[in-house]
Image (cartoon, rainbow, N blue to C red; front, side):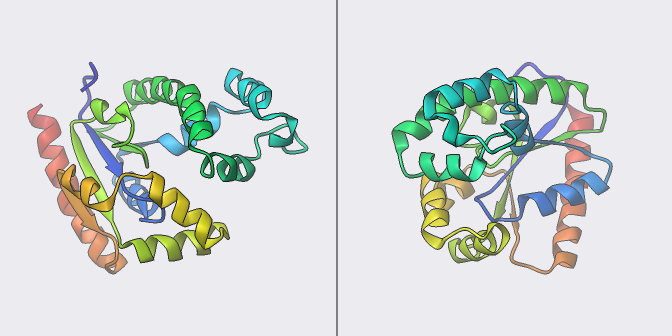
Length: 204
């Protein structure tokens, strides 16, 4: 774990697993949620060094008319070409990690939730004290993501294929939340986890 004084719970799961829904429930319990996806957007804002590097690498066509990043176009490129994906990860992951640590340091709550789809695929795992995996079937991942993003099935399937396999994700979990249950059931389970994390944080 990084040299951080706060108790940190890593919240992760595959695309379409419902991480954001779970994170909102924790937020409603007055727990600070640091969202790695949001920080990934911040590091490529117009004028950022990362976006300048991306434009130089992929060309101006990777930008929208307002000079912001065309995330959909970039996603299609990198998930079709592993070399391009690795180049992008080498550029972005250190910047995202730096921001993550800054936000965790400034958080004021009993413990902190680090919401990250790539918690287990990157060195972000080293930051957390405990890992909570949000679990759904691959079929549910496909359906939810296609409905949410309007993505084609082959695009979503390619993203799922680049993420850590479900069985390995579950094996790395300290806690697992089955997100194919009713919202009421999920909320009750989160309340139990919340109390557990409060106890663990106070004992740290």
